[in-house]
Amino acid sequence: DPWVKRLALADALLEKGKWTEAEREHTAILAAMSAEPKRYEGHLARVVSALGLAAYEQKHYAEAKEHFLATLRRTQAAKDDGAEADVHQSLCEIAFFAGDHADARSECSRALALNERLDRKDRQIEAHYYRARALQKSSASGDEDLELAAALIEPAFPRDPQEAELWR
Figure 1 (cartoon, rainbow, N blue to C red):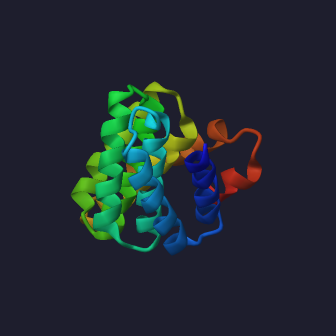
Figure 2: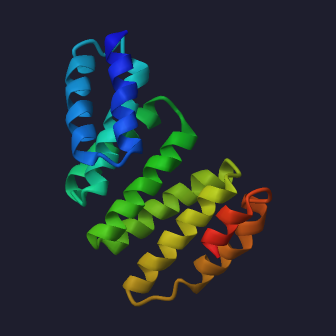
């Protein structure tokens, strides 16, 4: 399928950090795939999420949030808890960098709850970290979250000392 092939090329632009080009390509792909939603149902969330990532990397936080909220609705409809947790984490980071620390804490808590249920320790570290930073920005202590994140590093990355070191 030509649109699926074009999507792979557009995703490669994301991997290379070519945010503007990736956004332009994903926008065109979304328009084409949206014309046949049943046919492209399995790809639409990925396209919208990619648009959110491109916007986030360009610091267009309101636009990124809009795309990730649309992705969230799709992941919830598909009952994909892992993808839903990832979207909540993205929304957490968007809110954090946009300066909405209350929303960041809320989204991180949602991501954390799902990742705990799924036993995804690596993702729990990230949620604790950003929730702690959001707490600190709002003049509260995030020490408990930072301690919980630190305790998860070894179990999360037993075979990847470089990744573990990044989180220390």
